[in-house]
Image 1 (cartoon, rainbow, N blue to C red):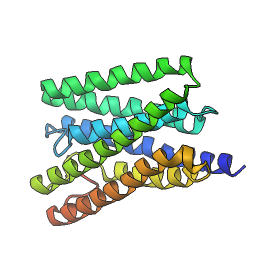
Image 2 (image 1 turned 45 degrees about the vertical axis):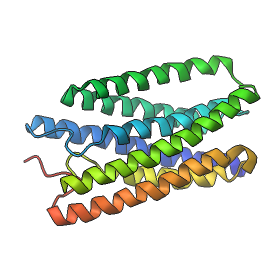
Image 3 (image 1 turned 180 degrees about the vertical axis):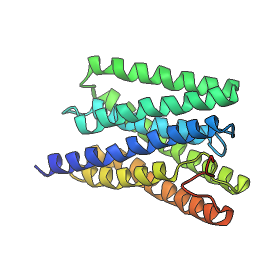
Image 4 (image 1 turned 90 degrees about the vertical axis):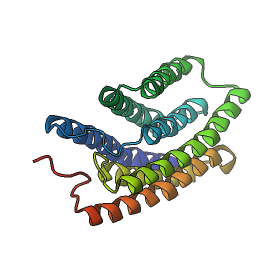
Amino acid sequence: MLYHILGTVSAVAFLLTWYGLAKQIINIEKLRESNQSSTQSLSTNQFASSFFAFYANFIFGIAIEPFSHYLVWTRFGALLLILVILFQLWYDRRSIPTWLILGLCATAMVIGLCSMGFRPYPSVAKLGANSLMLIVTALLIQGTLHQIIVVRRSKVIGALSPALFRSILIKDVTTLAFALTMPIAVAWPLIVLNGASVITRGGLLVQMKMVGEKSGEKNGHKEAS
């Protein structure tokens, strides 16, 4: 019963992440319409690592038995939204690395969806899912640290949306609570990944607040007007 209660709470809280990602897309569009740099201060590294952090949770939810609807479908929506952001980054910058990252993430998405037809995974596949979680944890840490460095160097928040990272932080806390309802032997990769996200994203929010106060930015970006 506790599993379903906290799973529902986690899924509802995750809708805030959808909102945050949508807000990030809106920020980009508003800056583009006002002829400003629409992706200023946005780190492709950060959003790619965020994609794979959500993707690891997505695959983990598919791999375990029973199938975790709470993890899979909430992350599916987030993955689609991040693909839109990565497309916006490529559209604004037209660089080969950004195009390659967009293609890699889109391919991973297709593979993940196809993997649903082969679940439940055997033990080897579950080991692979756990390994993916650890690899993605490392990617997430370095990606968020890179975003912190970008914000510190540019001294502006630019198009970066504080609402996005606040919503992710709430999501991580509720996901941690949900993970603790599972056996530790099953849930430990989820705990490690989301715990690392709480620490690093919390640090990024603090940095954004400090930079925003110094530069006089409001709502995560200079007002388009």
